[in-house]
Length: 279
Image (cartoon, rainbow, N blue to C red; front, side, top):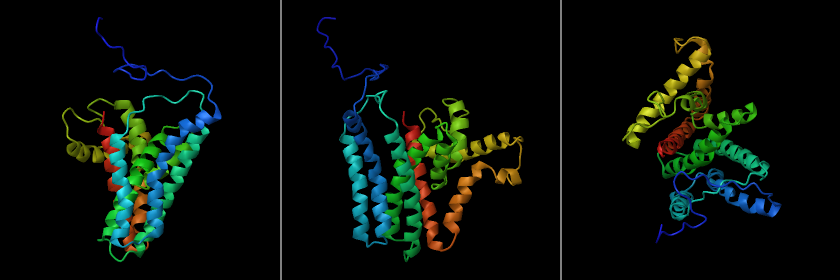
């Protein structure tokens, strides 16, 4: 068409499938392409420094919150990356990164429990900072990692994913997401699918309990009795309750101040459903 401008080669239109790089990848190029993924360590390393140095005075705790909000601003100013990974890139650096992120998440939650047991009051700025710092890390570098791991075919990878989900009291996501959401996605029967025009607040209040109920029904059917009572011993031993029991065991064992660690589950779950709601 006369006067029409030709699109730049690196831009894409809606519905266009990006071209996959199938050529050989040199070690130097692999390093360059992998390096940006190391930014995934920013939140958990910030959280690790926080829990290792706590308890804090209010101004010291504030220093750990600033990088989180700063990263949100920088992310909003960054461009979009639409290129898929090169087909012949080695996968082991990404697998190693996932292992490191799992180890950091488990360490951060355990060290947070230790720090909170040493805090004089749960109603402090340090507690609020913990919910933001460790909660954000658990969402972006915890639940997102677990989401990747539970989709792996290996039972070992799936177990790592379920363990991470248990740290934020969300282990039932393994059952509901894989065996429920992927089967019913986009239908009225799927509790994780937003309704047309539904706000995030209404979606969140509906989807969190609905996903737990769905996981419960799926697990009851797997055990051979869809009408199994909630107090049945087989149901109480089921995988849906594994994360809840593990989380409550952390929250209510030993010193009462450790209970505050359980409240960190709210933030990661909230952010997880934000990702679910976005198109």
